[in-house]
Length: 165
Ligand SMILES: [Zn+2]
Image: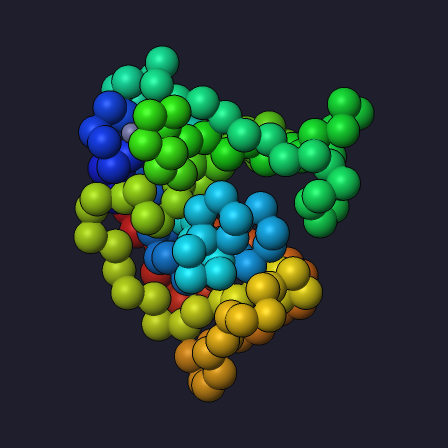
């Protein structure tokens, strides 16, 4: 599935291919909710890094949190492995990338213009770091994790037959 994305001011546009476009993971970690999550969380999906094409690349800049601020630590220079890319004009969060999983890129669902499927189930993760005012939904469609779930994004899609060509 080809996904189109953009920042709010329009200086950055991007496309990528994704077999796993369900926006089912809500991350409540401090970095996601401060930088991209007005509702107290951010939603990332996953696509193939090799297919990422960016117009306005020079307007894109990157934020790397300090390793001590993130679950799981970081590199030797004390930075988070995850790079969070955003537009330097309008501050829209665009995508994340982690060199440890270089074949994937993790666009913020908020930056995607292509209509995404409505997920049948929502996974709430990093709840140990959720803001106290956030109401995390309960019910059969909602699964909660204090840290990361064990099931990877691709396995979640495969188990439900939701991968797309
Ligand atoms: Zn912009």
